[in-house]
Length: 368
Ligand code: NAD
Image (cartoon, rainbow, N blue to C red; front, side):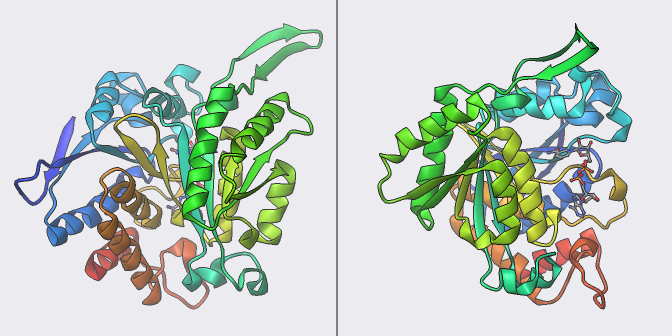
């Protein structure tokens, strides 16, 4: 454990934030979010206690496991967890139990974080960075993707065996009624606080697990008569996100489909470097992380966009610490920086000089 800072003393006990920087750009972007949180602590008189723990490839190198016991225990104890990303080419050939992604999946599962909230919003300042033609996004879009996070094919039975044609590999999509029910309630409750429209995405024309998913969503929809809900097949959803993203309000889907659709949706906003996420469950700690990976191609170059992680920290303040005003302030500071025309390389357009990770972080801190 590495305790990296304690900010602003106060009579109120410090909120304990476990930092899992991880691999690749993880350390750079988590440090950026900590800078912003320190500024929030200063400005609003809070006390945050940051403690750093190992996860992913760096944990494998240090102690042979991608999720050391100490990390898991600390995350259980913490008020919330802020994560960078895990993985990288150096770890790709490790056996499955040692792979960085195995550690992250185990962390989500062990903390019972079954609901992953991924807001996908077009900042008007970045409309020109979106690959969509301006007329398609003229009215903007604001989607909340709710992805089931601890079930489905990522956690189902998998393996290899000898079949009629030699070696085979298999993975299994498995969902229980209970798992679908609880994530569906999260989605309907979120829709009630938004525009009361919900689209549940599945592949019920082919998959039995999707047919159960659809049945359960229909059963639960009766309890939310004010929400306009409908189903969409995942192949159509992939197309509709490009054709008309504004039609979506809350998009509810499974672990695998949510993983893929949210990366697709991120591009509509200009860059995957802009998208935050919150993973919530019944337990004490929420986990907050950008939706992107460890971006090994740009690690250590001070060019990664830290905004997704900074916005994840804002979600952490809102969902785990009840600091709504402070979360709003971070989001407003990000808007302010974009209004000033400041851009990292991934969101810069021709004619704009990109600035680095640290420079854009300092701009957000100054705007606070
Ligand atoms: P990635 O998201 O890391 O990168 C995809 C592309 O987006 C790259 O070109 C990268 O440079 C760019 N990018 C990502 N984040 C950026 C940011 N903040 N600013 C600017 N550009 C950014 O996906 P990948 O390349 O498929 O995966 C790299 C590694 O990350 C793999 O080992 C993968 O398993 C892992 N991964 C981890 C997570 C996680 O920790 N939650 C999620 C996805 C992938």
